[in-house]
Length: 68
Image (cartoon, rainbow, N blue to C red; front, side, top):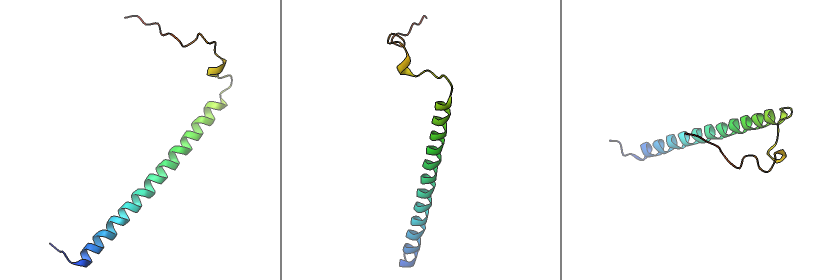
């Protein structure tokens, strides 16, 4: 087992490199997910004649009729 200071410094540097790579990957994943969300929202908003929840009568959606 090597307990020299050089080995400890090297191990710390390697761990910092791994942490940095992981942070970059997470940041890129978040950006990609944000871009997909924006694209999906734009597609939904571009649908012609899509009814909005505000345009529906007040009695719609208040009850669910089910049978077993």
